[in-house]
Length: 308
Image (cartoon, rainbow, N blue to C red; front, side, top):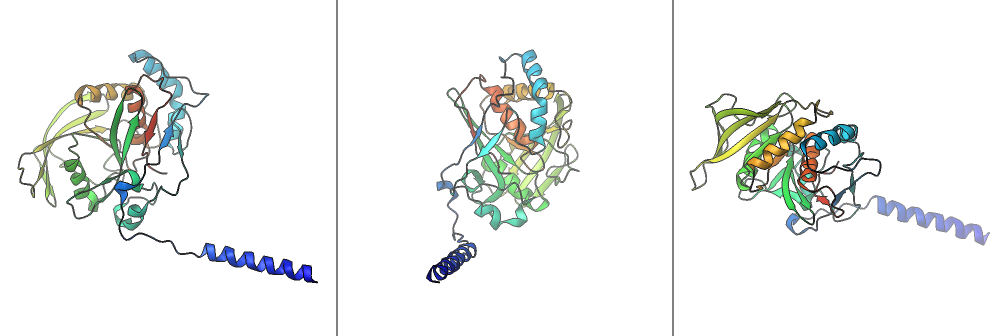
């Protein structure tokens, strides 16, 4: 009888402990100290079944992309497969307080914007935008760009605040304006649109740098700034890459990469976006870094990739 009583007592005690843990309230800090958080990297690594990337010649890059496009297609559909495969380290340091605190500024409930790598706006009505720094670190090269969602109508001023603050010169857009993306620039050449204190002028359209890619020159003004000079912004629109697919011809990726490398010689951070910031834009961001390297780096890390 005593043994049965002890067993029942232990079961009751364990049940109480379980319930107390399950109902424990989540403590959200009053102030988000995102800049001080330690980065939790996401490793980008080779799949053993995937062919290694060849030397950096035009033809061999095209052939390699053709052989491995099925893997990239899986990535575009949100699957972890192929050469570019992300593994998120499970760590308590990966937090999403800013994302959870600003639901009206997020297009989707996923991917979540990590606090540790998010772009923090300064001297703006909000410090939050659904955008993350993507940093590439290797023996020979260190670079960074920004991945972000397509602007919502109410986040267009935040988008241009980020462009102005980070002195971005190249925006590469991988979705259409009809594809759940608010129009954040003038339609007609010579047109001007104002988004709160930011003013955007469509100066002119340049010759398409790559087939299926358009190029517009914009001038960006911050009317609250004492600096009245315009910032030149190049808007690169990839129109031949449909959602959840890979391009019909891999030459698009290689030629766009080569053109951006030639134009952006100083490697100023660029902004890549599709509708959610983890599909076409994330694939191109990763391939951009991979082609930039010699492809035989064993210690390659691309950190800060957005969380799916």
